[in-house]
Length: 83
Length: 146
Image (cartoon, rainbow over all chains, first blue to last red; front, side, top):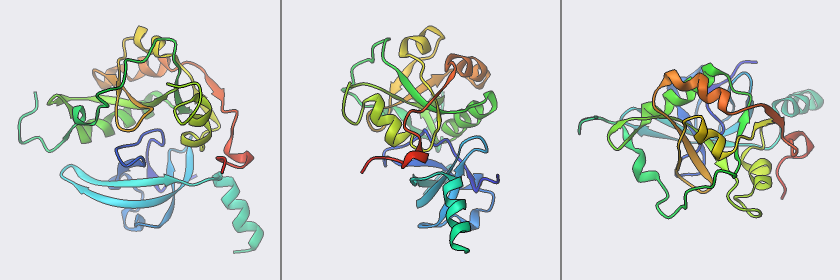
């Protein structure tokens, strides 16, 4: 499975959201606020919403909200509705 | 030591000042599986953003079950914060300390950072996490409670 953006889904900052760096995305151009992405690692993928992007001197931070449901459930949903 | 031109942020400013030192018997929860390589990657990410007292810092995140009930309980952590993980590590705080790793209460309760003095300790930290165990509240059964 391809991960849109690498992250440790255990981690959080003062916002309470998971954070990672934008340049760890497979395609940084698709990481936008409100976008739904697969984040984590190949061993621990999860469907997440991009909350915001915050510019820092060391790079752009991406905040992620982990959404309920597994990647497989989302895949099954898309298959079921024929999208 | 890092100088004033270091663009990284100070982790000390994110420590909860009134948090009591967690007891050795408390359980630290972390979703997995991890690998030695992933531990290094996560620790490197922290090192890129933060310093601790002006010096380089490496670490990974855990949630410590500080209370028997409520948001900082093991059940709540498993149901909510670790909702995407079917498998979890459940080392004790004492076990992590015995392996040489200190914990800092960082950001929101019950988040902690397990500190590493360098990336060369990633294999030891991976070993200290212990065996993977099943999350009894897997997301496949409906995710977090309403």
